[in-house]
Amino acid sequence: MKKQKSMFFSSNAEKYTWRTLLLEIVMLVICCIVVLPFYYLFVSVFKTMREMGLNPLGLPGSLYLENFKYAWEQIRFWQAFGNTLLITFSTLIIVVLFGSMAAYAVARRKSKFYRLVMLYFLLGFMVPFQTTMIPLYQQMQFFGLINKIYGLIILSTGSCVFAFFLYQGFIKTVPYELEESAVIDGAKPFRVFFQITFPLLKPITVTMAIFHVMSNWNDFMTPFLFLHSRENTTLMLEMYRGVGEFTNNWPLMMSIMVLIISPLVLFYIFAQRFIIEGLTSGAVKG
Amino acid sequence: MKKALKTLKTEAPYLLFILPAFLGYTVFSIVPLFKSFAYAFTDWDGYSEANFVGLKNFQDLIGDAPMMTALRNTLLYAVSVPVLVTLLAIPLAVILNGKMKTRNLQRAVFFFPSVPSALILGYLWSYMLSPTSRGLINSILGAFGVDRVLWLGTPELAMFSIILVSVWSQVGWHACIYLANLQSIPSSYIEAARIDGANGWHIFRHITFPMLASSMTISVMLLLTGSLKVFDLPFSLTNGGPGYSTTMITQIIITRGVTEKLYGKATAMSVIFFAIIFVCTLLQLTLMKRREEKLS
Image (cartoon, rainbow over the protein chains, first blue to last red):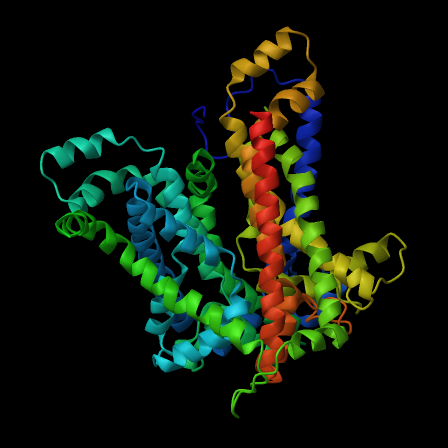
């Protein structure tokens, strides 16, 4: 890929014709339509209910902050944010670590046993959460993991399969020679993996991390089922609670939405180039 | 015996590598899966003793109209969304790979709707599509003299709205999957074709499109499994209504299982659901892998 100088404007406009200009204008109009819902969300939080009805798309007449204040009082933002952060990153570490380790063994060892392990993992790859949900709840109850943050973290050891398949495909494209020479020098498999192979897996680790953060941060079903008390709330659970109580107060609900999505959106705005490239850099090559 | 011990010794570290993932996966995925299979043949309600009832739960499913509706809705959704997203994402990726000056800004914009959770997007759109005077879409249409439309109040339109919102939120990020693939196509191929006198459409049809086969397999697989398992968006946008017209399998399993405690019936449905996902994904992967080989 060509290096670009600025963040938003590409510099390699070799043959920029009037047709490109026309396309660009059309595309920018489409872009405006695509972000319209977010614009609407953002301007609505500064309006009173009345102003929202009269002037839905215009800029707010004054910077009305009462909605925000009220929303902030209604949700436990920091607690939910902290829990979501803790869950997302602990599970990320588990999934990356265990997934890549298992993938390494399966990709590098040739015996039939590992082929069987792979088939075994494949079996459950497509199991939807709703299929296992009811027995899973019992299982979690049996282990005493209901309504515990660490319960959700332990549960993630069961979802290493996606990471396993991503890593497994990628490791096959990593040359074996480096590891081989380390083995000849007498390095143990553990050292070989963590010091030589794992650093080489960076592109797929980045892809995996972005996938995981985007889906786990926004996960609603799992915390909804397993975390009941308000202390263990997550951002999505706070959203759901808000809906139950204030559905008819639109500006308030929209303020809650803005608060709930703000951490991930801010992260995206600052890291969007990195995210868009990282999301695909590992996966497509595999 | 000695040989076996020696193999075990060399393999031991690798077995330890597999162990954590294997253990977690077995305890939290496979065991519940088989328990689900077992419950599907009982009349268990969560409290009283479970009795074996054979295939009764499966037979009951056919008579359970909401369940059949949910099945039909899910299939409709899971066909429409992948088809529409793919039809839009490929041209979008080609355009975003072009020479426009603002293409990076545009990439960021198109990707953006996939950042917030589907749950929140659903709630946001439920306000926007509201039939009251405050509903944004209706007030925009009203400015053009169009009568108020009950987007979420009529069965067909409600399903259409869900599909529309889903496509809107996913097109950009699937375009990014294709974009990464496009960037890996050597420009010499396209230049050579151009010298031979090929026009834009020919280049797309005979060079670009076939070379997107591998990312198409990935993208369609993610779309298909994601759409079959969809829960958050219909749950927040319409909550399955009006009636059962937008209820998905996932939601009916939760209603029957968690709310009504009909575990046997719910697990029977979830077994069927698993079979559908399994067959669809397997079929899709086999067909598209074969296509990849044919094109390469």
